[in-house]
Amino acid sequence: MTQTTRQSAVALLRRPSVIGGTCLVALLIAIVSTTKVVDAEEAAVAGAAQQFDASEYAAQRYDSEVVPAIEQNAVDIAQLLEAVTADPAAAGQEYGHRDGPNARYAFAVSGTGVAGPVAGTLLPLQIDGVPAGVQVSLQIGPAINGTALRDAVGFITFDQFLNQLEYADAATELNNQVKAKVLAGFDAEAAAGEQVSFVGAFTYGSNPELIQVTPVELTVAR
Image (cartoon, rainbow, N blue to C red; front, top):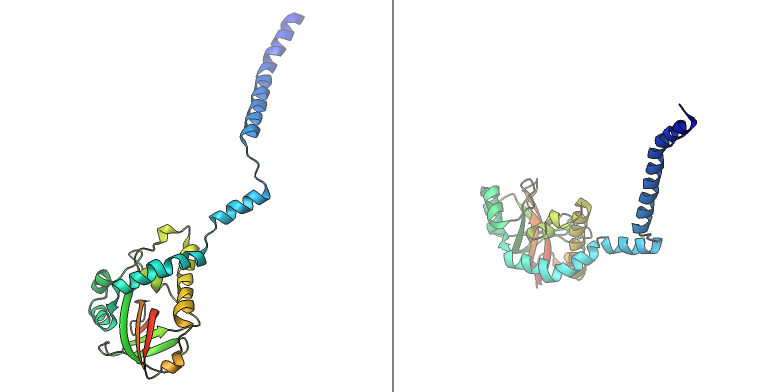
C-alpha cells in the first residue's frame, strides 16, 4: 500500500468520529439556546402560586357554598336516624353523599333537643323520635373532628385536589370555620337544660349509636 493510500484510509476511518463530534456540539448549542434559567426568586414565586392554601379555600366556600348546601339539604335528624337504622344503604343513597363506593355516607341534618351537661368536646342532646340507644351530640370543640361538612355537601370531591393531604386539609379548615363562626360565641355550659336547635352534618360511622354532628347553626331557646 502506498503512502497516499494509507493516508486516505486513515482519514476515512476518522471521519465518523469527526461527524459525531460535530453533531454533539450542535446538539449542546441547541439545548443551551432553548433552556431558560430560572433564578431562586422566580422559582419561589412559582412554587407559592401553585401551593394549595386550605385556609383560603375554606374561607371562600364556607359561607357562600357549604353552609347554604347544608341548610338546603338538611333532613330532620330523628326521621333520618330512623331510616338509617332500618336500611343504612338505602338511607345513604336517598339522603346522603359519599366520595366513592367504599366511603361512609355523610348527611346534612337539623333538629332540636334538650342539652345535657358538656361531655369533653361534645354537647349531648335528648331529641324526641331518635331511635332508642342512639345518642346525638354536637361537636363543640375545641377539637372538631371528621370530614362531615366537606362530604355532606356532595360537590367537594377528591379529584378536585392534588393529593389526599390537600383533601384532608380542606375538611380541617372547614371545621375551623365552624369554630370561628359558630362556636366562638356559644356557651355550651350555659346551654345545659335548654332547648338547642341546630343545623349541621354528620358521618354515619362505625358506631351507629353515637352520632356526632358538626353544627353550622346553633340556637338556644331560653
